[in-house]
Length: 432
Image 1 (tube, rainbow, N blue to C red):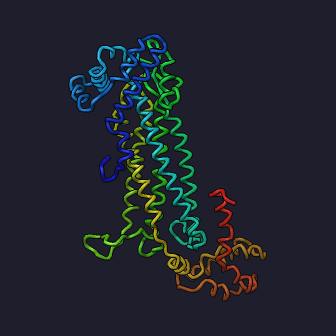
Image 2: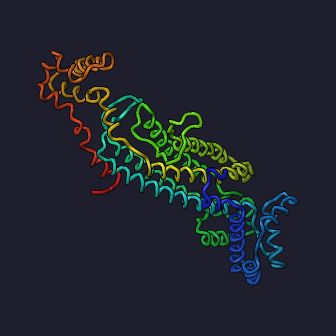
Image 3: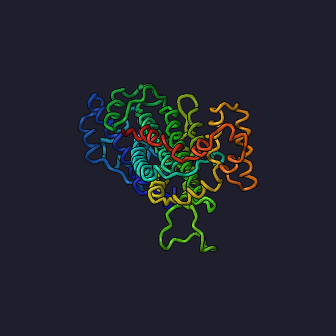
C-alpha cells in the first residue's frame, strides 16, 4: 500500500485513528450492555463515553513495553477515563475487539468498493450502447472468427461485473459479523446479550459460534471475492491491450496532450493504464491463498492469521479500490476506431463467413464432411495465396452445383451476424 496506488477514502479506513475509534466504540457499547445487565455501574459506562479518548502515538509508546496492542489501548483509555476504566473489557478477550473491528473495517471497505463497481457498471453500460452496432471481427485463439460488435464486448463486461457486484454484496454480508464471546468463545465470563447489543450498534450480525476468533472461512470467501473482481479487471485490461496493438489498433487508451509514451521513442502511445491494472490485479489475487490458509487455525485459536490480515486487508482493499477507479477512467475515455475495425475484418477477404457457407451447403443436401472439405479448400487459398474467398467459391464447380449464385452471395451479409444484438442487450441490461 503506497500513495501512488492509493485513494485517501479507502486509506482512512486502515489508519490507526479509525481502528482505535472502532475499538473504543466496541468497548463503550459493551460497557453499556454490561450496565443494562447490572454487571457494572451505569455511571461507569457513562464515564467511558464522556471521558474516553485515545492517542495513537501514546498507544505505540505503551505497546513498546507491553508488546500487546489491545492492552496498550486499554491502558491509554484508562488514562483518560480514570478509576471507572476498571469496568472496561469485562469478560472480554483481545480477539473480541480485534475481530469485530476487522469486520467493521471490511464492511466499510466493501461499501467503497460497491460504489466503485456501480460507477464502473454505469460507464460500461454507456459505452455498450454507444458502440452497440459498431461491427468488429470476433476472435478465438486471437484469430479472426466471425463478426461481433464492440458493444457486445462492453455488454459482456457489464454482465460480468454485475455478477461481481452480487458476489461482493454476499461477501460483505458474510464478513459483517460480531464476536464478543470471551476466552475460547464460551461466554463463561460475559453474557451473550453483550455480543448482541454491540452487534446491533455496529450494524453487524452475531457470530453463531465463535471459538476465540471469528471463523476464518468468512474472511477467505471475502478475499476470494476480491480476487475474482481483480481477475475481471484484468479481463478488460487484457482485451484493451490486445486491441491497442499497432497491428490491430481498434481501440486505444486516451492519450492526453503533453503525455509522453517513451523516454527513447517519441512516437510511442502505450497501453500503460491497462498494463498497470493488470499488475495490480495480480497483487490482489496474491492475497487469496494466504486467506485460504488462515482458515485452519489450532484448536480454539492461534494468531498465525493475524500477520496475514494486518497486511492483506488494507493492501487488497486499497489496491482493488485504486484499480477499479483507474478502470472507470480508462473505459470512460477509451478511444475506438470503427473504420479500423472494418478494415481488419475485411483483411481476410471474406473468411469470416465460412461457417454460414458450410451450413448452407449442408442445408442444400451436401454431407457435413463434404461441405467442410469444400469450404476449407477454398479458405486455404485465402490464407496461402491471398485470394478472395467469395471469388474462389464462385469458381468452385462443386460449390456452385450445390448453391445458387444469389444464395451464395447472400451468405456474405454482415447484418446476419448482428441480428440478435438487441436480444443480448435486453438480457444484459434488463430493458425492453
